[in-house]
Image (cartoon, rainbow, N blue to C red; front, side, top):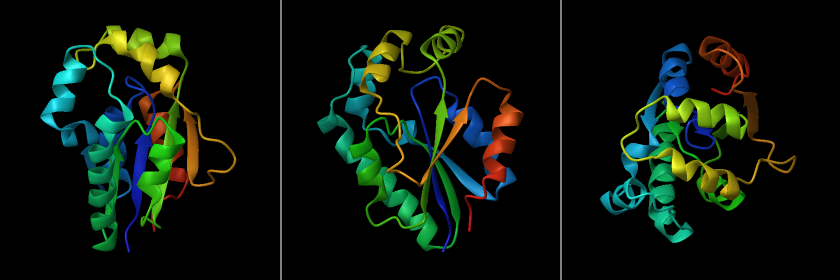
Length: 168
């Protein structure tokens, strides 16, 4: 049985960059959850419209399925997925006993500064506020969540996650 890691956090927290750097270090495949969105969701976000829970349901179910299949087949898998609400994380946990979450935590100002300096296919900086409003930070009743401050270098973040021993 392999491991399934969700890199979670608001847009701009570094999920993709960290996932790509972490994957070879822990012998895992990295999948950007953004690439699993339906075209309808992509079009909404590109238009600056925040997704609803209903919009996210099929996407979250697909992420859970992909991670479960990787782990079941013995592979380690990292998927970048915002997983902003506890209910989203609970859906991802269902039938995924080998799942771990890594919460990439940062302040609004830090992440906003990063977002305005990058180019993203469909996530305008105007949606960042809605992401923070939606965010339900993991609490003590979610022991499968490892929190990492993103107020450090990429290599330091990757090293901290690798040392957390989240893979089987």
